[in-house]
Image 1 (cartoon, rainbow, N blue to C red):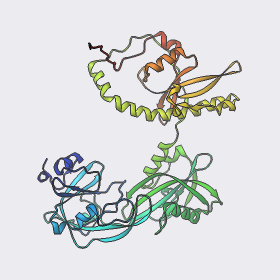
Image 2: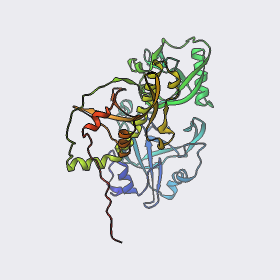
Image 3: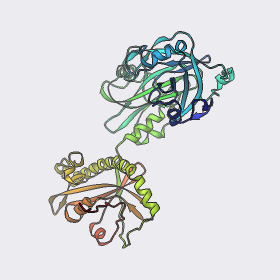
Image 4: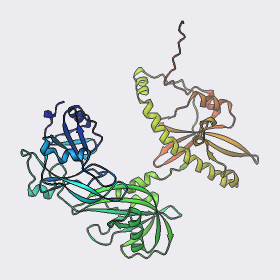
Length: 456
């Protein structure tokens, strides 16, 4: 693909840019030495870092550098001198991830200037604003288009509020939710918090806002998520942090209502749009639990003989499935730990519950995932649990097992295989019946190791 092939207003992929401009495009400002061009990427997605905006048919473009004060070095220097050197500067705008809308050539229109902006760590710093204009054949925005956001999703200049919110969690794992009592979002639910003042860190602003709004002191912990959202009259960059209660009594002065809501029921509330994705992130981060067991009758059956097409697809998907299984497996192991501890506590053996351990995180030498215990005639015995994230379809449950795991299952009397089947946000647990399992052939080959002796 050639640079001249790009059409204004059309959407392209990153590979198209790499092919035409011969750059890597890992940054917002990309100097492509092989084509002697400078390509600017202006992001307008929820995870944007810089405060680029369109103002009076100009793009106010922020220089490069995510931490500390920006300086006229690197690509910033190239853009500063582009009118003098004749370096061609091209603009692509991203409204959806991986989609690059082409806006053509741009030119520096007046002197750049410095403004205050927070860096990626929440520290105040100086950034360079470059006023850019599009080439003359680009159709300018009309007043109606500016009002109704017609041009490729770009909105007129609006104030951007830097806001922090608190996910305050009590001992019952409930989250304190606040209902807005004023303004255009009146009646909507949100995380309590407020705007960051100049010179404040996120934690300082959040502790101050919670003290002012609720009269309590909190300790700011890890971030839940960050979301950039465009409302009709303003934009907001919202960061929400988990917070623990320190002292004081709640005395709300800001909201229509406050409620402690069970974490799993947060989506029952009518949340403000900026808060919704963060609520989803928080719910997704909650540890999953085991919600009952499933028992199956085992039937004799022949091993499934897969077609060539199925075998090819299995090989192609192997690496991806392994990655997904590792992620799902860790969640499943944590659920089993809690399940085993609850079982032993209910049996009156909290001493054994305290000894349940996720040994897969300690060493692979154990050959299983969870060390637990069972009580037989009053005697405690170790059990070695291998946790499998399984899927259930039609009349089958399916999971992967290695040769080493298979041998341990056969020869180690303490070895157990737990299948965890995802049901909504939780799991159903099925313990594989060892006698039935080895009485029938349920194994289907997925790949083979080829080892051929050759003559020296």
